[in-house]
Amino acid sequence: MNKKIKLILEGIRIQNVVIALFCCFVAINKIGVFEFNVAILSVVIVVSLMMAANLANDVYDVHTDSINCPSRPLIIEPSMIVFFKRLVVFFCLISIVLSFFLNLKSQLIIIFSIPVLVFYSKLFKPIPLIGNIIVALYLSLVFIFIEVSITGYLSKMVIPSIFAFGISLIRELLKDVEDFIGDKKTGLKTVPVVFGIINAIYIGCFFIMLFCLQCFIIILDSNIYSVMAIIFLVFLPLFYLIFLLLENPSIKSCKEGSFLLKKITIAGLLIIYII
Image (cartoon, rainbow, N blue to C red):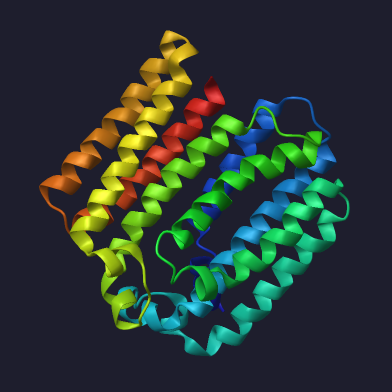
């Protein structure tokens, strides 16, 4: 039983779920005025969909994970694949049912999101860059969904959603480089498979520079403390990441970069929460 629970927690990617929860907390804090019941429902929906998407990803990625990530739950225990599928259906149903207690805009977001989330690995992941963009959009959609479900419109969460999209897109590109060997063997047409590892890293560095420019434009009117926080906690680590990738353009450096980006994401969320 303990082994099964451990494999389930690995399947739902508990670290990613915690980051999604943090995003929800930041969004609710920045919105300020809200109905507590609506906020709780929105958070439960976000977490449920996040877990459903991660479990579905494990189900569809069995072949590539057997090469790239042999420690994934379904590689260790293939018999759990049916149970994982049932969990995906369960979490999706929870999200749909709970969405009926929210406004129409929130319901539409859920209805259109679920098919893309569940079938992402099968339909969109094999398409260069499109799959990366979709994954990046979903983390940014957490901020959008929380505000729309609570207030009925989008206003304060535009900048946080842009930040989440940019940093997630860069991380997804680097993760594709990490998965290059398995993706190539299974016929997936990801950016590094189509353009090569070196070119994929150059593309990633280009997006990092675009992201820094975007952040710079956004903080122009911010106070000095916010600017300094972003420089030291976001810009400098990203400049180091560019140096790391260009100095040693490899799968190993992309793995290190992906881990660093997760830390930058958390730092960025803290800045958004504080300012």
